[in-house]
Image (cartoon, rainbow, N blue to C red):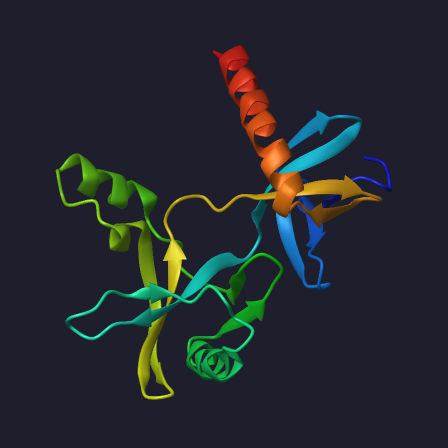
Length: 188
């Protein structure tokens, strides 16, 4: 592999790519697919560490709410840090998403699919598995692991990935999906 391409993760398996967002935060990802479009290489990636989302857990009457804007959530995330450390896990404020590193059991997607096959209700809570629950600022919160694969789209530049966001994402996302569909049909 060339020096300006994705790096190997040391075991020779799947190459990894470091992705940066506009604020300079980073996320180390596995390279799943490389898709050339308009003279640029776009990468479909999955995080090396486990992606998680912060959820405000509602009282009995309300609905749980995913905390999208994390800029003001640092005091809450600091509490999550302490709780995770008790389990030898580390919360990372990565590009794109929060991630957790450490020896952690991955959610069992097959078990999730079996539950759906058995006709269990498919509400939004079935799409996530709770990792931890904690209390901060007089409110219950949880870190949840998405059961669906978490993909990141990046534009490759000098061996690193630049997160594709906004208008560029809207423009290339349908074309990337079409290319992946074509590749999948070619494999059949």
